Figure 1 (cartoon, rainbow, N blue to C red):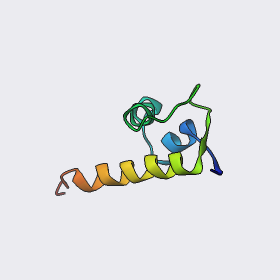
Figure 2: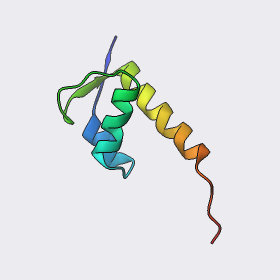
Figure 3: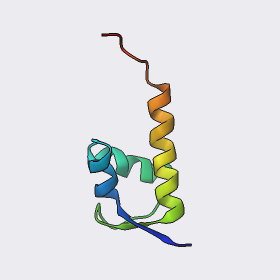
Figure 4: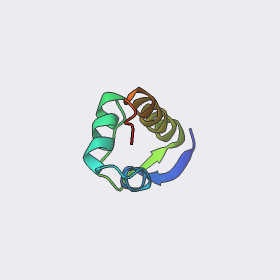
Amino acid sequence: MGFASISIAEIAQDHNLPVEEVLRLCVQLSITYKNPQTKLALEDAKAILSALAADRTREPKTRP
């Protein structure tokens, strides 16, 4: 398994999310980590990004 060279904190920052939300996803997906600066395995990063994308498609869209 390769590494994505991205940390939990970087994913949170890139997606304008609180770090705690990404940590919650890690727990849900059984992804182990030591702290928010933990570099993720490629498959773990992909799983988190897929979960974030799925959450966004389920959110109701607001009208302006």
